[in-house]
Image (cartoon, rainbow, N blue to C red; front, top):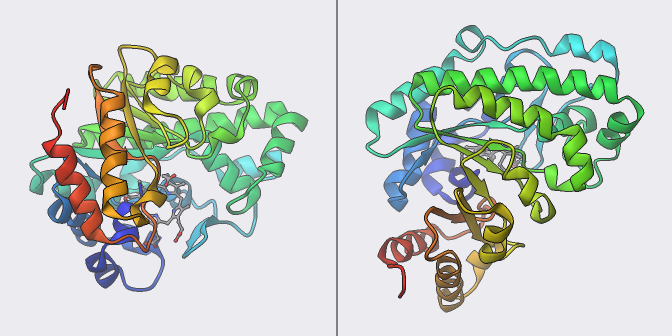
Length: 320
Ligand code: CP3
């Protein structure tokens, strides 16, 4: 979850200035950046260096990533005529560099590589708002004022993100993660009506490949039951819901991912250690826990702290 850029001096040294979207277009560079946190931390899986906005950028919607802000567009999606700006993604011709990066990484890794895409609500919110938002006012306005157009927009994003995921799987990723990061802005009934059918379709398509599917969003406490029915194998949980409560909401038969509060990384080690062990204990006895942060690493985090956490998790034994 945006971990490399947030914490590693070697990342900043390689990445330099310029748009992250240009860096992503260079497979050698992107593969090296993907491998940096693996070498440094000894984590159990790598996440591809790319961004959720890459596919819509590649088909020419007109979206960029502004440093310190995130995805922005000067010409937001507001009416039916904007659908023309969202043609089908053809990964081989539109994002060959993503496919190439996956292949380069897989050649060099002896742990699984996770591919990913953005969930339709999260991508739609950037396209409609023109950038990050606190209220999602324009996104919700479009949903409620013009549900038919919302449906067409979701259809377009479902095609685009599904074919991106499938192309990454064909290139060799071992698992995929669908980041619908901002979907926690919706109530359960809004989620059921405006998001669930499309995410379900995405997972149905991806399921044909047989790779494990992870689904993550922030502030999704009230949506966890619904998200666990949408077709993923692993449900990501942010730090707001204790893992045992998340387990009750998600049910057995799924793995959980999470859920250390990234802000705790600035606390003294004894606090971090206690919290990590607490989280591990909360899910002990249940199969399936990918230990992770509840969201992304912030830029000021000391890489040494992350290294100590990885070591602590690896040393943990159930029942301790
Ligand atoms: O950990 C990794 O580096 C894996 C690659 C990765 C990036 N973005 C690279 C990146 C992944 C998995 C993402 C996903 C992503 N991008 C999400 C979903 C996960 C989440 O964090 O909720 C979202 C919402 C985005 C959109 C986005 N891209 C934002 C909000 C930002 C932050 C802007 C900033 O500078 O604070 C980005 C930029 C971005 N994408 C960075 C990285 C490493 C940091 C900036 C940079 O290096 O230029």
